[in-house]
Length: 173
Image (tube, rainbow, N blue to C red):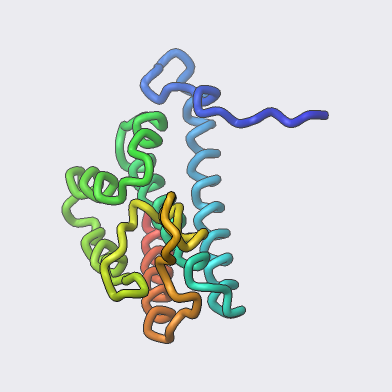
């Protein structure tokens, strides 16, 4: 049997009161799926760290996990539709701004601070919105690499600190 591709338009509109029960049932599944994805991504990051997987791939998974977490937070705590949240793309600043507008006491500033400390191989701040390129270790249409391949102990501790923050906060939402 050929599998069906999941499409965002297959989901009911959260603002449609026509079939409220279906929407609620789907939301529970969506919440659970986000939690599973986040937890599995954390396990992947832990595997990368414990087996010496290269820095670009590890950071890719870390920022993917953070993006999932931020979008999950918005799904859980706002009335935004899934399409509205999906349209925010990979803009971390947009996601943080939305979260900070709805709840100033959410401690997201701490997460923002933690992830701003990651640097490229030339010790420059990285554009976290471009994290999809991290797994290839170069920006589109560029040859120069972004990171050295080895994760330094200081960076490993920072990655672990971000993961600990996500794990602790995930329990609260």
